[in-house]
Image 1 (cartoon, each protein chain N blue to C red):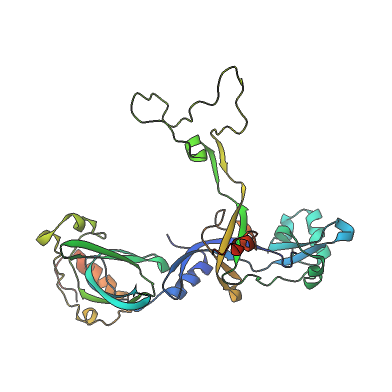
Image 2: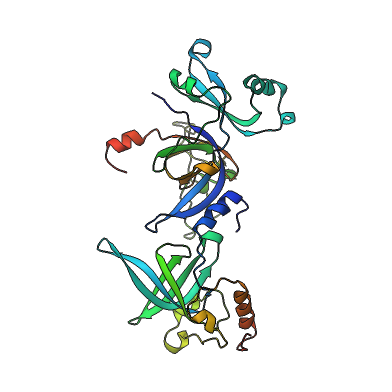
Length: 222
Length: 150
């Protein structure tokens, strides 16, 4: 079912590239160099099969001894960013512990990119939930950016859970789905993905094969 | 807005082109650009005043404005677009701003840009200017009004 693991990457920033016909494509530059298999998860021991991948080296003195032990076991340099990818059991043998993953993505393929969005702090309802606010005229008094009423009276006598209100925005895990791989610079270990991905520059992200593309291709649209 | 990331700079550098003349806003340029017509590309020449030129590493762009049959027409191209086949510098203009958006509100003689005097023969001959020196010289020329640059 799952024959290839995803990859971990560092978002370097955005730029643009030109296709041969002159189309300008906005791309996010993702560095995928140094994806190393840190451990295997097996059915016998863990109840599921997965590859544990480490990315971007970390100085040993910045890690706990417990974490260092894991990397020592695998005989790889300590890594900052470690994630697991569920794969089929037979795939494990192809990626022994300590081996490096080559960029598995090809131009034109679709990927999902998972990252932490930029934190925006405590934001009002208009920005956080796209509430409409109130008119600027016709007697509005100190109520321009409010959300309005938040409920009824004795019935139901409470504010319904999920009521859209001001609060903390951003800094959540988010998946950008179905991004086209615009270009692969294998020699530099760089992936160019069309459009923006969650997070600030230098943030770690996870790149996976798009979940929905098969369904989308079945319907015949691009 | 410069990128400090060397990888991104390298990517942008690979798309940069060095064959554009050193034109700036106020200059009259002749842009040979591809337009697609009936599924085929052909070169169309668009001559007008450059009213904006943004230099952003590999991401610069420029706008050329002309008045065609009494209607103002503006076209914007990315500097490094492969659809821009060639840019010819027709004449240099004497302007005091980097962005000439005020030309949109002017018409007739008021919208005319005075030609900058000086010895630009080398540039105007259409030879691609590689040196940024000439750019600096011209910038100085712009400051010292109509005094010809040497």
